[in-house]
Length: 363
Ligand SMILES: [Fe+2]
Ligand SMILES: [Fe+2]
Figure (tube, helix red, strand yellow):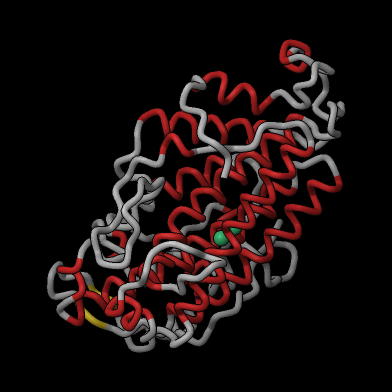
């Protein structure tokens, strides 16, 4: 990771990222003075491409932060993904969804680490500033045995998980890009704040409580990765340089690979009620659930409307609207509860990075 820049003010932190090729070829004033977006600065990237890459790096750093927390307690701790020593009870509850859950958690975590590390290295190679969020690593770790005690960017202990992705990908007649909304598969997860990792060792029992925590994680994994699945194609529509497009088109589908896996595993989460807080995981294969909207073995996207209702239904990623896509992602992660406890400055930085990405135009 990059060394932290505690003494850098927020304004300069943000502004530096917008100045491509700081070697003096183009100053900030000149860039701001109305050069068309497609003008190549040194390194060959437009400021829009830099802004999109910087937002994606931000999203990947945030993903890495919480995937590491999952891996410390429920994944495989090894040289590829170091940190933590595992929680046996939490890991066992995750393995109810699939015995290979620790491997999948490990691999997803490693992928996220490589995503932001690559994007930051690419930005540096092009003379642009990488993203560094180290100053915001202020949130507490889980106190459960197995977790590292370090500052975190994200909070997995007060999540409000939106599981409407479940029905969104099964609808044959609706699409979020047409303004449609979708019912959640687990309504209870939208009605409170729930831990997706044990907060401490008191959360390891009773059995239906730690299983509810593992179930929450299982549905959260798919929530996160369906977001990445949409974010990359949404932003790819506004990049300029073919190589930046290649980066987005090459990373984005790995998010989809994750999503497909997690959608399958979430379907194995056992129906139960958490005795400590009343959170219900319904049987998705029985009334009032069941059928094409909820049946758990329907893990591939159903075809639906795309671009215009005059076209035939098509199996697609959804949404992929590009306008406002970065801010949409920032808002979805915030509504998910991942940043509960973060500072005003954190949100200001996140929103400015999103605004800059959404201001990018294809040259
Ligand atoms: Fe990623
Ligand atoms: Fe991801």
